[in-house]
Amino acid sequence: MKENSIFITDENGKEIEMKIYLTFDANDRQYVVVYEEGKEDELYPLVYDNEGNLFPVENEEEMNMIDEVVSAYEEEN
Image (cartoon, rainbow, N blue to C red; front, top):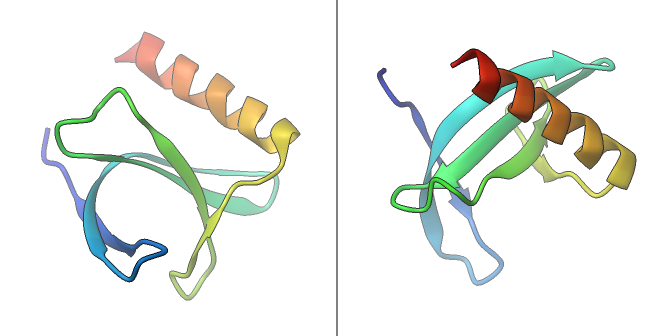
């Protein structure tokens, strides 16, 4: 499987390369789940807009939905 990467700037201004684990659309929103190379067990869900801007997921209900999608994806693969 070819892995794609995106670069995210942290709160200290440091650019971090993140690997894309999964992308999906739900409830009229676009999601990307990423992880840092070597830390595959730590997944980070983000929302992105049509311009490619990334935003943290802050809603617990939304986090639960993402957990369900990730679990279903892992069961299939």
